Length: 415
Ligand code: SF4
Image (cartoon, rainbow, N blue to C red; front, side, top):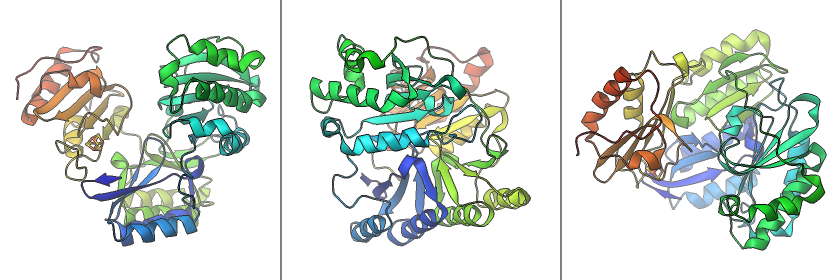
């Protein structure tokens, strides 16, 4: 993809996981063929930024050689499969790998897959909020422990989409196949959101037939801290990547830590964190110190404050303004609030986040639009403000309210 700082090359690691050796290669290639910046996306993919037309062929060839990209041109047209990184780590999340392997085989062979949109996406989880918050065509949500059933939700996040029903875990792949075939019959390139909210939903449910039981109400998603040393069914060290972006040198440190202090597996999360399972107990302190020194966040932010911003200007050619500095400044105004989220988007495309945030700022041609408790589309409906007015508006909003507002904030001086 073209961007303000050159080409962006996206790598889709299988199931959102990398080895230390692969990461080391990606870091080297980012420095040699791009501008050295590597990003994590909200689909647990990796992006190499600032690649030039001259260096792109070499990067492509090496990624193929390393098994990080398919050799055939439309090899990435198959649906993206995000496997919850907490599989087998948190006690509530069953091991998802056997089902993931079944789904992968199906997606690689079913003829109906060729009729799907290349943006079709599937999330496989054990009910974590971390994965449930990702907008996808299909959520396959295994119930915890020994229940043996999975809930199927389509067209959105786990709790914002349409619940089709539940099936036995051993039937998940067959239900998915039947749903995909039904969608393909409705027309090429269609997404679940095109059909799930209308009468065609009945066709999807009918296609699954006897395998699908009616919806019984989705259990709430569970969540847990991820950063630092975490103890679960298997312990791990987790850290956040500020705004999902770091230099190739910093990623090389991560590769070294994963190889020297842990078995070398890295799991990427859709919230732009990295989990290193199985860090040797006596080396946890050393691992955390190395990661902190490289600029990663190894502790949960105070109050759970969440800062999200896309690349913004000047890196992205579509951006109408700088995003990350503004997100930090606005975040600094909210230290006493627990669990608030700030999202700054350089344009209406909203690359960095699906859905609402407590504070959403989106740049337009006439200035910045500010919304509270809404998403980028909602915030865009508000009057444009000069960037210099954002701070005062945020302070006054939270001085007047004990909880984030439900509706977009629509007042303020025009630009
Ligand atoms: S949201 Fe807009 S400005 Fe930000 S990275 Fe995406 S296209 Fe660029």
